[in-house]
Image (cartoon, rainbow, N blue to C red; front, side, top):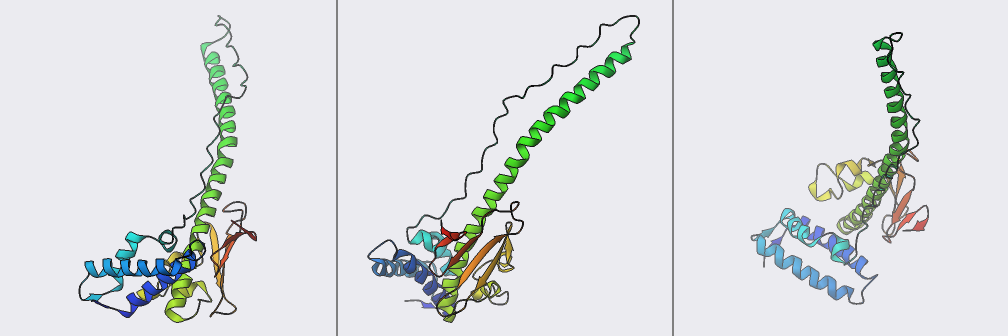
Amino acid sequence: MAEWTHEAQDYVDGYLAQVAALARHRRDDADAFVTQLRDRITRETEASGGALIALDQLRKTLAGIGTPEQAAGIETAQPAARPSAPQFQGAPVPPPMAPPSPSASMPVWIIVVVLVAVGVVVLVFFGSIVAAIAIPNVLRARISANESAAIRSLRTLAAAQTQHHAATGAYATDIAELHDPSAIQNQFIDATLAAGAKSGYTFQVTSEDPETSWEATATPLAPAKSGIRTFSIDESGIILSNGVPI
């Protein structure tokens, strides 16, 4: 049997702890399921590694198994479908002015100027209609994408808190604690999320009792522009939108 580094052992314990927490909500044999999963991870990791199992080898195995939610058989939220722009059915356009008939009293350049002016008016009219339709839809699509990204980031924070608790015995009280640039084993989230702002949302992690509870919130950077809804999650793993489970 191969020997595992402390970092690899702590990491897999944290991963399995979250799988167990998720699995208990939907299956009666959660403990047996987690035991089988641990055996599978051990078998696959040791089969691909040498005498010493490091964290990088473990992460390759977990990448093939999936996130804790996927391992527990829970479908993750998919990004909301972007609304398609309504098909332009054609707004009533004033009929172009009929150019005057050429005559000896009307020079050709006047006819050309009139035609160009009519063309400019038509282009401006159509352009304003297209802009009125397209701009709101682009904004709604961006808001929808940002809100979906915020939900995914909160799930990432939940997984990171589970791993942090397994490694240290306490939950992080600040989001920056979940990414230590000097220690890869303490990089539970990416540096961008650890900075507290990502995809149009700001994120905050708090804990009144680090041993038992924590909470994370996601708030739009620019309300009604980068996002509309606020979200939160705690140690239960349930995401709330404006206080209502989603």
